[in-house]
Image (cartoon, helix red, strand yellow):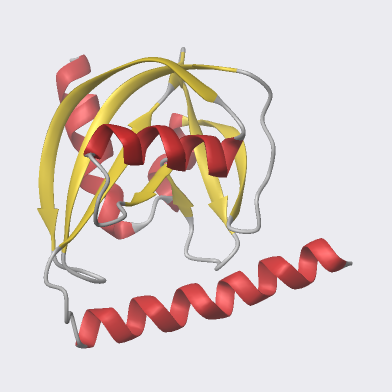
Length: 149
């Protein structure tokens, strides 16, 4: 019961912050880092508690953090996993739902998956990822699939 309440609270906070920052980006373009972790035709995804869809593990950088430190912290917080290796694949700018510059890493991880108040990590088949992925993260999947072909 308490867990569901925390997830609902996160949903309200998340949607409010996204809407507000999308309209009033007082700090300019935010920095973020995400990990693309694959096993065959499945991706490690986050089923977000704010009902915005699936997302790759990762999140926003604290002002003093490097992109790499953000990646390590966010993946651990959201999934319980430790990254055993990671490589920068590319960066891209996005304007919706808020202005952001995202660093995308290909990564390998170890450990046991654990949910957080933000999301539930899960392995998802490519076809399901394509249908449920948050629109602001579609460029990640497109680039990863292009590079695979």
